[in-house]
Length: 246
Image 1 (cartoon, rainbow, N blue to C red):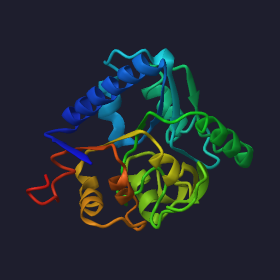
Image 2: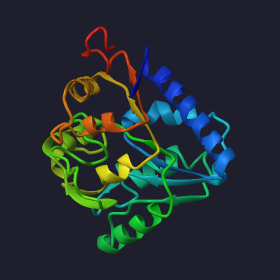
Image 3: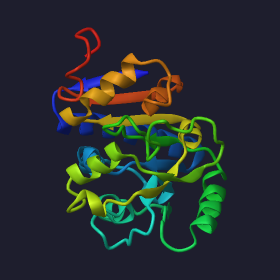
């Protein structure tokens, strides 16, 4: 693990974007293309703002994303497809974007997504950490065993409360209860993982992730077993770490 603590969320986003752009450019130079996984959510705003200013040949990049709510229309402000089209594809004309779509025939869509993501290794995954320490929508207790690439999951109460708190929904009652998520196994198969985790609401999740052993009750702890994981924090999200860890 490589941990980086920046003063602010904006500086965190800039530092993570600098590493991501350098890695993508090096990968494209070596193999002619790059494959990425992207996170969404309010915590990722500083990263997307920063990487929009980087010079990357996006036409050689293939994009996957992590998750989407079941039966969520793309027109809804909480849709992750909408999020990525507005905050990423608005400046990044990628070679191909593979969207997770929770409408229609979900089973057939999971098969299609799985076939696409398994065609070649993922070079870089941007994997956030939720307030309940989930990665993607793998809430605790997360499934560390399945070898599937994507699956349908039921969202726990803390996860749904986070979505409400970030302002995506008007009440808890309308927050979806189920979603499609990339699995832990598929996330961990990525060559490099960068986690952008700012803000005080993530401080307890970060403390648990770094203090606990590897456990599916704190799903993000699995990231510590990855050979090339980079964790970016700001002073707020690092605020509960011991002094010698922050």
